[in-house]
Image (cartoon, one colour):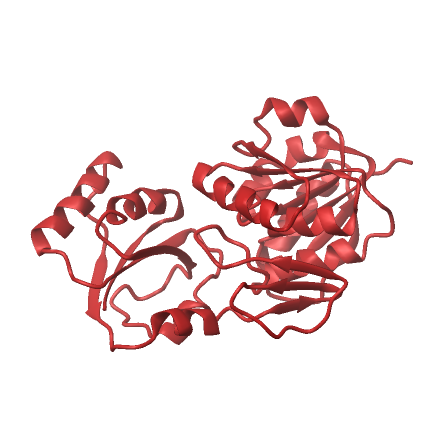
Length: 304
């Protein structure tokens, strides 16, 4: 098995992933720390912990048979040309023979968050839970193992009211939308994604879990389905600092009086300016998770 790792910006990662997919057995995208060494030869046990929600990504491609250098370079160069940039840094290494399916699955155990159980399909023995969600790791972000997703799952269970209209902005795998639909039966739940393929993953996971969630392809709040169904009394945004800030005015406008915003994906050092922004827009901090590095915030819009 051979591994190629291409380091690029988060907004460009999918272009390189598409270029590598015809040749590779598996292609994945990991968000990493900005100072990640591009020549670092990581081991499989590190890959599952490389998701750190920064603006830099590694596009990882695994090959059973390595492509020729010319084919590989041509594919990457074509993607770089489409993005109007120079060829990004990449590393190439041969991996030791292992049971890669078993090894990958070992990094995705069942996750328990309060009364919610997130169980991958390969896990047979899992603890009992009143809310069980079947979900496998895939290209779309959100399996319950990261602090931000875990914090949102816990925040959903601490709400002191039953929301009737819910939207998960940037749903990724669909996990939080599925959890909301299971926790608040009968609510109208929407899930949005800017990436069509991630939305397909979310729609598949939603069907597998037997819940009713309307999937919407949208860049933030730019969708007629959202405008026609506003206001929402619960908004979930597990994103990054910049989109949280960019969407802030629309988020508050779409939130019903008395409604709640669950917000995560920011680093601890980004909490103060983001809170200041939402306070200026009229929201009140109601709850904060205890994680100092990855805070999850619950804010309330004044009203009945």
